[in-house]
Length: 383
Image (cartoon, rainbow, N blue to C red; front, side, top):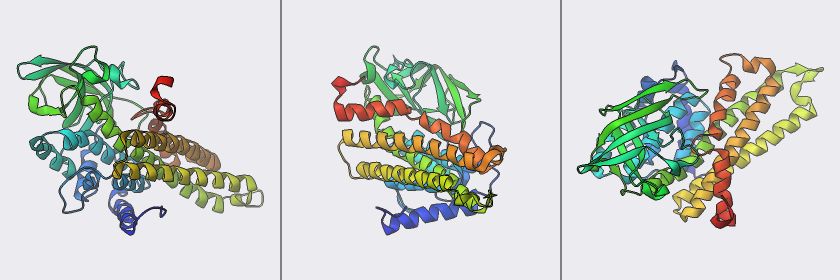
């Protein structure tokens, strides 16, 4: 982890790992498909949620630092995937409020998110608008000086339990991405209901139904009709950190596998003495390091304020390569452990199950390839 990191960044990553091992790992973390509020509050108590917004212990929340976010997620993922995901969803759901909301709106919600008392969610996907996010059909109809939301959101992390949702709705029919507006919608709003979905996922996911939910003009995030830009700015920040999550998971799997092949005896000696095993470990290690460097490069591009096209391309490259590589690495680690790796409760059983969703959410791998191709070849040559 040392290449390209400052001493302060290395100390921060070590602090996150040590704090998580001492205080998070011993927790009995629930896996019942609902938000684990006790876990979220503990992340707040330990000061880990504050790292989502780039501030130190006594600093006010500000625009997130991508490198700090990546180090936070990578280090936490090596200890607890459930805790890492709970933390990341807090940031994904609330960052648009800090970034694009009115100061009084941010003041009402961000401190509660940082303390873990309020749970946040990012509500973009719909039944017919997943990868094609511009095809949103949830409508925001004018109602006096505000709007009424009608429609459905699907595959929403932390739904239906969140206290505050960043919701993207269509305010101008037929305008594609230019007709979408972002709103902050409290979970207790009249007309908002939902249900939990039983998915193969390391975090709670649900469905939301908006039946005339009233939103005031103060709830608009950014400008009316510019919600798609709010979503993309948020995803440019969080996509590299999904890669960091993948790096942390793969590192955890690889560490366990190196220890295993050193101890496991087969054919008269340690499994590690088999050349095919050693070469596979070398290949996985190389893929892991390449993933880490792509993630750090993307985070640096964001923090340095590079042009939007560069940020988007690097974010897409980091997420694409790191999540695909993590799937391959964890699969290879399962192979070396054999059947024991698939026993319920085994570290690799958790990782093997949980890593799959990373290649889908926040833009599937195919979408990342499209973003990269458009940046390199030109939009007029790609679809």
